[in-house]
Image (cartoon, helix red, strand yellow):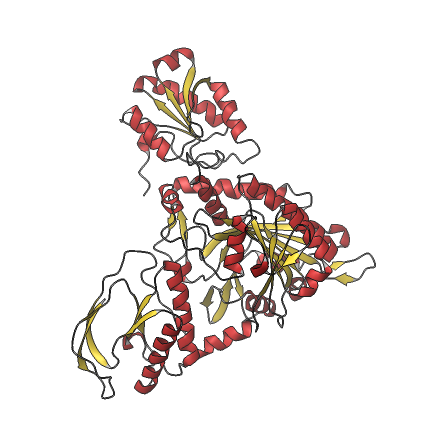
Length: 600
């Protein structure tokens, strides 16, 4: 950024030299101070700026007065006072800070990096801060570590030396406020993009799209999430519905206020609506009208719900932190807390089974709304930790708020950049049944409110994809699980003379619901194989004259690099065994690569 004061615009302008100032590698804050802005607003803006700087690995800012952002400007003395407060507070926080001269017309030039985080906007007002203070309880969160033996430790007193380093990373981030020092763009992003999984630039920030290969991956994961839920030993009712709910209705408004400050809202016909942040609203709105007996409980309700959270633009991360996500949201309705605890343990087991099937493990954060819940349920919580086989981090939320839940477990992976990332979750909800009027009739004929478990067993589809790709890039030969791959078998004929044989082979595989295609393009076999390897295709079947004569294929296996000769039936059996127990989503792509466009 370069700027030069040209001439004073107001009589109360600061004194300044008319010379060019240049600052390199700086985050520029164009600031308009409006009527009513105060010190709290100034400090909140700088605190958010510090979080953003930590995220991008920078520590240098330029405060640049810029009156053109608003028509409700503060009086010059008030505006200068707020700017000086921002400058001083930033320096107190250790930020290298420069402030441009106030009250001048200035020439400036700026060079901005071509990066999704390069240009952003923020708005702060005393009214918003006041609303935020009513949503957030006073006081700080407190933390303990609970071991599988039932012992508790303060995070700063725990012996991490001989323990799992990944658990230490979780504790440092959540309890001690120490962020990972690893910076830069995550490697997984470029691999996602080659499958056509990317941001949608014609929408709001934080919305993703899926090209044809990415759609095959998405549909496979969505079907798998549904299969997991349907395999649970209780009735599961699938529902569907709206993604926006009227904030004029008390249950909707109260639940939204408890959710926090990431509400994604729209206005229609002078009414305010909240975009659902999970399947809760729709499922609760439906189930409140059911006539339910204790004999019907427990049961589950399920929907893969498009969900919306107004994440800060500077924190958006492809497939992990997004504004629109798809949540395989399961709610289990239980008679009482004891039954809810029993079912939470079952879900806990399944959540761990799923991540461990990928060769990964979770590191858990147990959020509690009171110390009493720990004291009353310590044996049961220790049982959960004992199943995990390692310590868990416990967080006590500040008191003084009417929380709708008593326990919320976050399941974190530690990604390739040593950052804890929440993927799965389960929660005990003791408030929303009453809020939405959901009741059941007990043995004595009395109406009662059920306890509700919230769970996304594999996390959102986006975060499960994040886990899959983070797992893949750790491998010597990066690969997705075969059941997820858009193309599971690619057939490469050596010449057009083998094309008919390749078509017969593809037909046999397709009939077994194996996703297969034929590379019939005018390229060398080596180039075709190299491109298939780049797309992580697990099985490459090369067919030449010898294979046609023998009625087999020459198979290259990506996972171990082996080359073998297999018959068509042996190949089919081999791939089906690789995908056993997983969804078999058919391919919607043309069989021949020569007629497909290049998906950008």
